[in-house]
Amino acid sequence: MPGDQALVATALSFRGTPYRNGGSDPRGFDCSGFTQWVFAQYGVALPREVEEQFKVGEKIKQGDLKQGDLVFFHTESRGASHVGIFIADDQFVHAPSSRGVVRVEYVSSSYWSRRFVGGRRVLLDREQEPGVAAARPRPFPPPSAADAANERSGVRGVKAAD
Image (cartoon, rainbow, N blue to C red; front, side):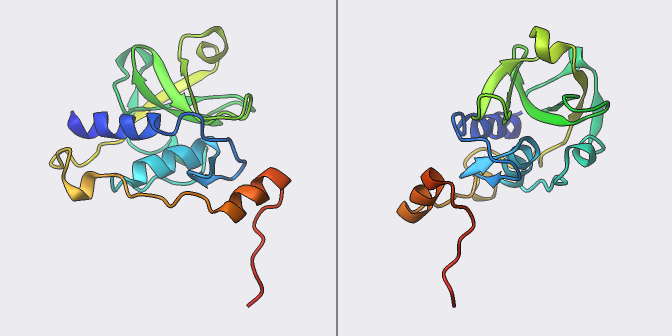
């Protein structure tokens, strides 16, 4: 499934990106912003909230997970409250708030296995092959020097006056 491999490669390319509450772009992601942004690069519009993403696609049991499936966990309350993207070999990539960066972890780890609530398979357009312009991730401009300075100082969302 070439589309799934490309999607996972895109997700993995953001390892180390900082966690940002409410973040939904490569300057910083929260968990559902991360999955929404990655899938959008392949023409799939996911809802913004974890609970809504948990309703999309086909239900998948933990033992049937495949590359590119969404994996859901309860971290704050019962039901789905955290989401990531399954890679393969029991691993998933996600944007957790604890240690602050997009990273890879094991679904079967003691922390995540107790919190697993399900997987969902959201089908990509299987007709798109790697290298087709429509299937390539859209580039995102790197943060400007001003953005980087604001990030270091804790200033966010400051706009110049018109």
